[in-house]
Every structure is written in C-alpha cells, then in structure tokens.
Image 1 (cartoon, rainbow, N blue to C red):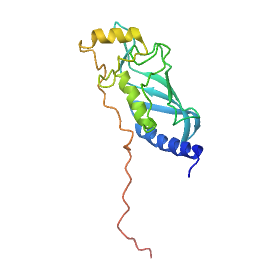
Image 2 (cartoon, rainbow, N blue to C red; image 1 turned 90 degrees about the vertical axis):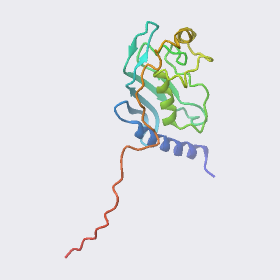
Image 3 (spheres, one colour; image 1 turned 45 degrees about the horizontal axis):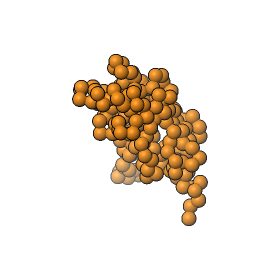
Image 4 (cartoon, helix red, strand yellow; image 1 turned 120 degrees about the vertical axis):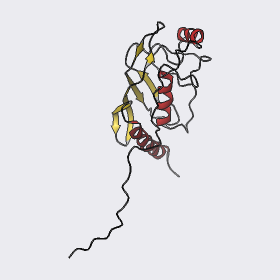
Length: 178
C-alpha cells in the first residue's frame, strides 16, 4: 500500500502533466517551488478578460499564484490574484483569494485551474452568488445578471486532459544496412 507521501508525489506528477497540457496562448506558468514534475507552487499568467470594478472596467491579463500545501491533495490549492485590483466577482475575495466553493479531492489540478479561470470569465454556469466571498460584487452581479455583461469573455479554454503534442507512429519501413 502506498504511503500518503507516495500518493502525493503521484498526484503532483499527474497534475504537472495536466498543467503542461494547459500551456498555450491563454495560460502560461512557471514553477515557483519544486522541480518538474513535482511542482508545489506555480505562477500563472492568464489572458482572459475579467471585470475589476462595478463601472465595469476590464483587465485582460492576470498573474496568479497557486500553492499546493503539504496536505494537498486532501486540502485544496491556495489560489491568489497577484495583479491588482482583484476581480470584482462574487467568488473572489477583495484580498485576491479565490473562493473555490467546495473541494473534491478527485478534481485534478488542471480542472481546478480551468474552473477558476471560468470564474474570471464570469461563466454563468459556475458563478455562485449564494455563497459570496465579496458581498458588494455579489449585489452588483445579481442586479446586472440579465444585462448581457456575462460572460465577459467567451474564449475557449484548453482541456487539461488532452495534450497538444502528437506522438509520431513508429516507421513500418525496414532499412537494410549493407
């Protein structure tokens, strides 16, 4: 039976594979703590439009820290918006922390990151005003919900389970060396 530390290392390795699949024009990242594939903290640069105040004003690029505590995957990643001001969103605290709702240990890191980015886009399927991290943003969102402001970005996000790289099939030709 695997130890908790061995389970964590397997999870970090699998999470790293998904993070590699996310890299592209929309999402960039660099490791902050740990060496691939065992990364425990990432700095993400995310290029989607989000709302940053009630005017509304928008921002198209965000620097986000993502930390995996020693208790991970039994405890959720800690995600904080480093770019200021933070998103003006019911599910983002005014200190820049993301309120992820509930943590399910089976949710992979790649899917967790995509869910977080969907909140930046104000995806109506996952924006939750019933449990607000920012009550002012929640009240604003509820008043504006039917105003065609949302989603504020409809960029298609990458699938963390699908690699953009293809493996070349082995050649069926046989060469004879003389």
